[in-house]
Image (cartoon, rainbow, N blue to C red; front, side):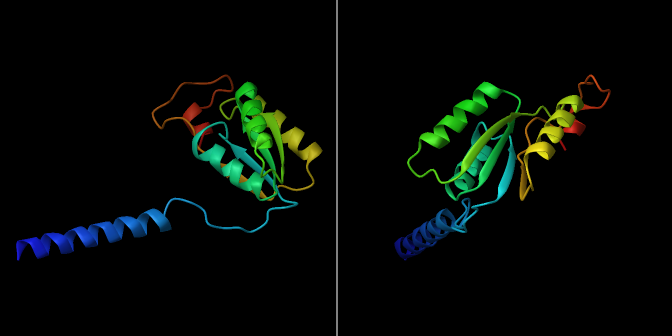
Length: 144
């Protein structure tokens, strides 16, 4: 009897794990993003990078807004070198903790883009960071 209960428990656990693995944690949309402009912050690593990859492969014009232009250009090169490239990728400097950088980025986007269809604000930083920045606002507040 205990063997049957254990076997049933294993089947239930494996079924739940299988269901969770194949229904959670990844986008299954195949909708075309051709002609759409997407701005992604924090796209040089992690979820932001994978989001940029997915939207780029679906034909979007992806603007990687990042603090480190070298990292941004590296990611852009990776995306463009993949064989499934259908979109366009642009790298622009943006440091959300520096308001002059935010203003400069906004001005550049307004001058070069007809419309922004998606803004993906991939949060980076920690809630405990309270360093006062040049423009006298709290850095962690600037990230929210």
